[in-house]
Image (cartoon, rainbow, N blue to C red):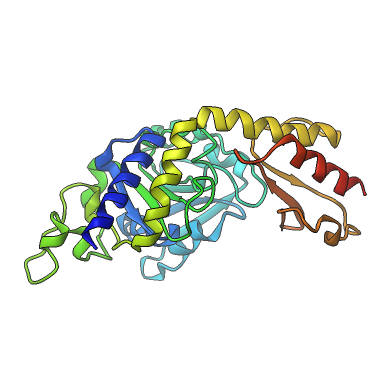
Length: 299
């Protein structure tokens, strides 16, 4: 089993590179919601939490579940998120790219508003990292599920934590793998956690990390800037051929009308979210994929 640690360590290093973060900022886990739950431990009773409307529930539920804190949770439209931040906002939690429709948050505006109001920031970068250039050091906390744009097996996830906030995070899931020397902290007391963000590590499902390390290696070798240009080019090609304006996301969301029969898209890997067709373009997609989709929609 200790041999698997090489895969976990390699994946941690590769993820840190992908999001331009120091290695000691990076925690490994398995699911986004569990990592968001750790972030929620920094809040005091009655804290104000700001979240976009219709946000993915792995971001909102961990805060809603903290009924013991009587949190004041407010939702606003994504486009008004930055302007809704004020001195009374304790944390703003949002996705860099919305899962349902691909809308890209104004990361700079939110970060600047949060900084001006001493508001903590939590960004779910699951739908961003891997195609959208993203700097995790701009935010206090980030969480990323690797099974989306990072092409990894389901069951691996990452969190970045600003070092000065690390002591405020309650290590709810502290176990042997969060130890300063994991293979020397499997028995007995006292508590001896790692000094950096590894103190929040969840014990890894090793086989999933065997797949995650080479996937991250591939994305880094190709380069996220290259993937971004490719994905955005295909997304905007689709929009252009459908007579729609270009956008800034690799995810395209289209209203096909109430009478549209999804059976017409059989054989194509698409989804329907919030009543709309949702398509995500990635590095393995081609112009032929766009053409097939356009033809299927027109039929």
